[in-house]
Image 1 (cartoon, rainbow, N blue to C red):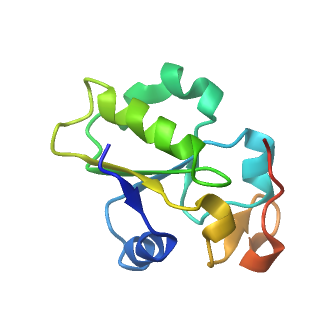
Image 2: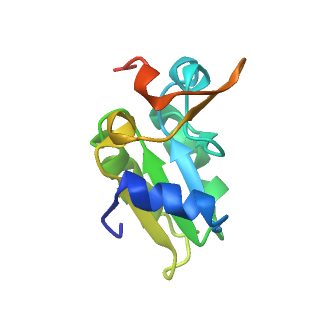
Length: 121
């Protein structure tokens, strides 16, 4: 794992349309209530069965509610032999509670960040 990345840096990557995969590791129910736009949902409980999805990725950022479980998820992804040794794998510091941007929802598009997702853990 390549350490942590701030929510502002993640927002910049998104705004710059960077080649980054943002992986929200919360359960699906929490994810659909609100997530970082463009992120993909791979619940932590399914990560070991799905880690091959990140083969060939150049930059992966893991996200969880408070930035703790995402560190473990980033370590797991970075240790997978299919992930290129030059790939950058980071955890978003502070998790979604530190995210200041809008959240995308399954039914309504975007909502304000201050509405925040409910904690799934």
